[in-house]
Image 1: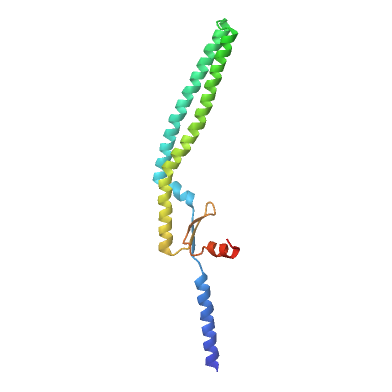
Image 2: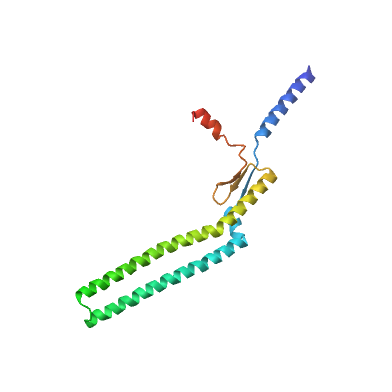
Length: 171
């Protein structure tokens, strides 16, 4: 009788132990931002982006200097009485048009910088994400969390219950 109770207790304990371990998930974490910042490829991309940005800013600066020179020239003509009121108005409209062109250039410049940054960094980030997935699969991690943002960088999809939830909701 004692051996039967011990056997049943042992079987029950093993059953509980096997159920709890089958639900245990391995979770890892890393600091994604710090990892990416340390990569030499990112430093090269940032340097290339800075050079590109300086080129665009130099062109914008030349546009501003040209506008200022034209304004001063017109101001000098007005002070000397060389321009009639109609001519002053015409020149003023030309200056306003150039101001709008400069503002438009600044917006386009910002968009170009963002696009250039994305084109430079996307292959690097894809490489990092691929390596994270490979290491996670190698080590058997179900989830890899980003310490810097608290987001999930990798999941092995075995814990995804979206389909079951949708079914219960009738979706």
